[in-house]
Image (cartoon, rainbow, N blue to C red):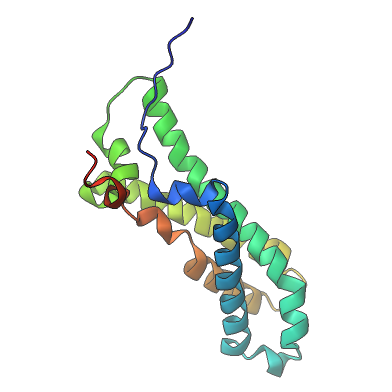
Length: 171
């Protein structure tokens, strides 16, 4: 029988947002945040002056914003998992990779890696919203503002939460 080694058994705190039943809370939370940002953008960019109705604008876009946002968060999380996987498969011990999950602020390389993963998610949030959600808006500058605002505000900033706050007394 083949032995299996478990690497990085301490899950990062943000990882919990993808596990049932917490994923339901995450989905609801993301929906509420996305709703606030979509409505905020509607008023901030004065879309009513451009002939948009808040009710119609919201109904046409919120599910796409929400779904693509969660997909983008998942893509960023996959990059973090890939870093951990590479470390485990090649049996290398790189401290900053371990710290990505436990405390990204303890090492500059860990922090940079997490910020890059957040930026990757942000890129996809922007791309999906620009290309697929707001693609019917002909004004490219407005489409860019909407997609960029959503990307910056709704990026998975939770990736920065150190997991050590859960495990402080257990290690």
